Amino acid sequence: MPHRPPPQSDLPPAWQLLHASGSSVLALSGDWIAQSGRIPVFPTKPLAEVAASRTLTFDITGIGRWDSGLIAFLWDAKRSAMTAGVAVDGSTLPASARTLLELLPDTLPPVRPDVRRGFRPLARIGGGTLGLLSELGVQTTLLATTAKGGVLALAGRARMRRVDLLGNVRDAGPSALIIVSVVNFLIGAILAFVGAVQLRKFAADIYVANLVGLAVVREMAAVMTAIIMAGRTGGAYAARIATMQGNEEIDALTVIGIPVADYILLPSILALVFTMPFLYLYGCLVGMVGGFVVALGMLNITGAGYLNQTLGSVPLDQFAFGFVKSIAFAILIGVTSCRIGLKAGRSAADVGVAATRAVVMGIVGVIALDAVFAVLADVVGL
Image (cartoon, rainbow, N blue to C red; front, side):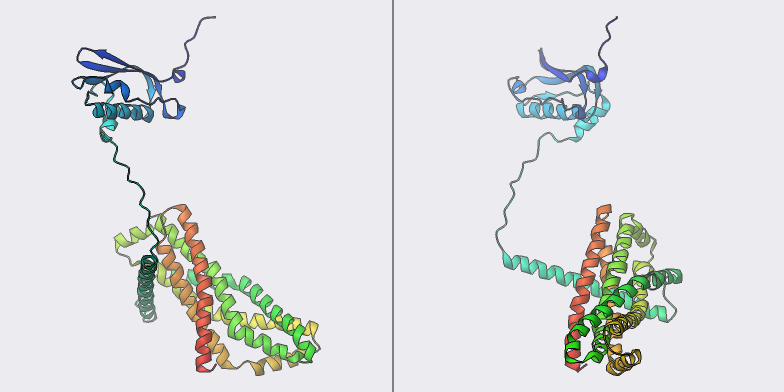
């Protein structure tokens, strides 16, 4: 059987430094493929022993395939020659290799040691405060721009598309009815169950209607609906805007001259402002129905008596208070989610980070704002 030479890809890279009159020749052979893991490291000692008057040239007649592995080896040799004071002549190298080699610096930049920063609490507090104030200013400007756009929309002079507003209203309103119904129904049922267990001990079964009605109308319907919208719609807003940021659609709108606030932000925020109050009222109704079902099943009361007690225990000012809170929650969720989407990065991972951050910030913001409303309600006597 005739002997076959090994395939070219099996030839290991090899080098040899030859000395001739007035010059040193670096002869290379084999395949110089970086992924093979066989690229040698050029030592500094051979060129350090060469006279400085010599010139280093290259013999590449024996080279097969090559990629960046050859460039890395040649760069090591070039830096060793420059350190030893030996001139380098790369005229025999391929044009592409010579071009890549010329792009690399002759010497490595000095490595700066990591500077350990000491414990500076005032600097950290100051930096955090400045960042918080800057972000607060940006969100205030965004809110003012949105408010101006809303006024122009009411006057019929807004530059947003009506189809965008209707699409956002559909996503934020009717599409969220099922989850709003389930959550608020269960909240009302849980409140009625807990109240029934305790009030039944004092023969005050009928006051379960007061407990469920006031708790749902004053707090739970507005807060739970806002938390649902923060997780469902706020996260979707942030992810959508972050995706547009990554696809450079935001940059394209800016270059064309289309205001991002009118084209993207205003329909999203207005959709939440329009739908949240109605979702709040719907959540109140469903929560009361949940309490009604549990009360009829556990307590010795009639349906008419429960309804009459509910109507007498929940005044209209409580509905107005919850209505105002739902609008404030909608503005908070919309502005925060859009802002987080606008400042997101441009990678796919940043889209997920923006959505997660919008959900977390929306939920925490809703609870914090509800605490502020509770203090204000106590001040005004509601």
